[in-house]
Length: 241
Image 1 (cartoon, one colour):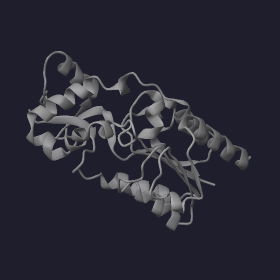
Image 2 (tube, rainbow, N blue to C red; image 1 turned 180 degrees about the vertical axis):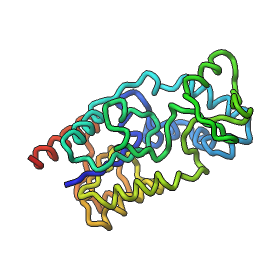
Image 3 (cartoon, one colour; image 1 turned 180 degrees about the horizontal axis):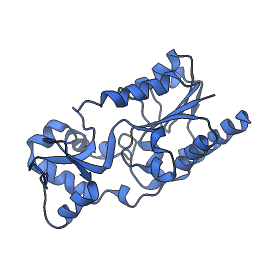
Image 4 (cartoon, rainbow, N blue to C red; image 1 turned 30 degrees about the horizontal axis):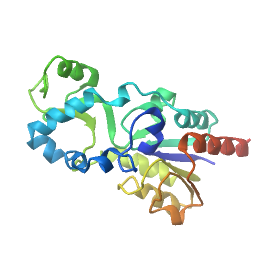
């Protein structure tokens, strides 16, 4: 049975990266941070950009390592059961754990690259952060002088059509859809559960907090993700043998 997986910030908390909407989430503790995460505020306010570059410079993702949940999904792929791995995360920990890049669909982009919002130049984030560390508080594009940001989707930006199309196809063409560490409140990602259900797939949700899709799931798992997901993957692999 082909399995498609949707992961959110909760899968990376064991790697030391805080989530957004959980009890200790970044936006739960600081609602203003969510307001500042809009593309309009970023473009209009140099102070917001300067704060964003400092936050990127000190982000815990640079020191983070994949955890047992990331590695479990690598096992699922190596067993030949993984149809696709759709992620809302921008930390690339799935790829660093060993998931094949061609299996990973990054809905919200990656923080490991920077992009110019004027000429679309994409550069390694490490190069831009080196400029920030050297004293540039809002480093302009080296090619056109435009505003740069991480190569991620901010509030108010459209997801890339080819990316969301691939995610929808992954949800539509699986026998089991597993949502892990996501509140399932942000669309269109949350709607992938509905796509999978409409196509006849089973739905499993692994998340500490309740989600809107819990009533429609075949199974809801509340145990810590670092324990629950490896156990679920082992169960799936054993059943396929």
